[in-house]
Image 1 (cartoon, rainbow, N blue to C red):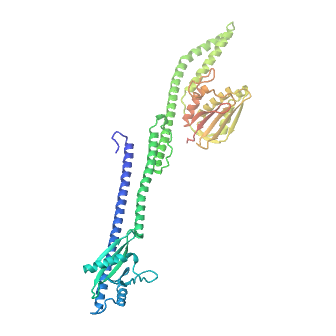
Image 2 (tube, rainbow, N blue to C red):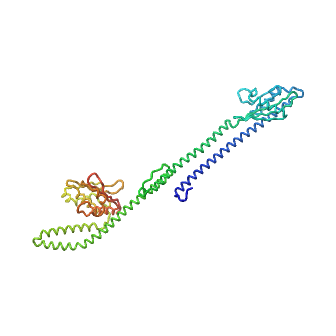
Image 3 (cartoon, rainbow, N blue to C red):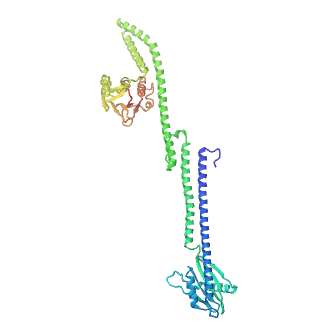
Length: 494
């Protein structure tokens, strides 16, 4: 049994191992008991057959003795060979497998018969290998004056002898019988031994098979246990199948749980990122509102005085013009901050994609012409459900950035299509510019992260916020040349 300090999994494994071992020991004990019973039953059967044959041999010998004694009258020659032969064939014919005859102390074997012999020819001669033993048994019977039995247990058979004294006036005459009983070395015994060998083989093979199967199962179980106990960094890596059908059901369940856990973690990370961005945008909104409130009125006063000074010609005309331009630039910056600080509200409705894209691209016609950049549209979708105003702000940001980063003679392509895998609309803006620097790529969608001199770094952050508000996402797609941005928008009912 497992020690109490071990884990519950190890206790289960040790308990299972012990149970399987006890099961195999029980099987071995049952097979051993069965083999003993089979062997004992066979031995009892062989002994019973020997006793039965011996009883028949005694009965036949007694019949030969009594019938011959009654058949010989007083004063007649007791050595009537013809009578002996007739009695032998008549009596022994009723006892299958028993042979016999008469023996005289001066003339030896005077008569013999084996009427139930199964050979192709009639057997007429006394078995040569047993002649001496038969004579010894008959002499012993004549000396003792009563029937005598004897047996020889051989490797393949047991030979049974019986002898009975026959009353005689001239010399001593005795009747004898002999029978053969197959012993344990016979065919039946060989079959029993073969069956017992098969039984023993089954016990050994089942033990070996059980040990090998449990060793493999324990090895796979230990591997799964090690993978479950690995570091947190690798904890969500999928566990490979073991090849064992029962254990693989557990492995598959663990892998499905890991997939769900990984999806939950990814979703948690996305929600955390979205929450952080929302908090930053909220902070940005409060900051922009405060800045606008504190700065806008002084700017208006400065602009009014500068315009009044410009109305009176003098030597400060150039300086005042510069002040006016700077004030206009500062006012534009404040308006940009305020527009990005506004909360994103989504009001979905069906939108005709070609008309909407044409309107958005048309707004940048003059700017693209001045920059000598060609604007292209590639449309594979006719209608979709989204908020055209907020998504238009996101698309405007991407197109404006693309025109600004595309050299003269280049092109900006706006495309709209449906992703076959996710079923979402994909808005894509690609340019032929230098692409995004590796140092900036990781922070592209963070607020105030900009790779352009003088840029505020809020455009792409606003794009992602608008995409998130549509339950979608915005991402940068790395390619061989130029930059490419995608907005993923799933279909949602209005």
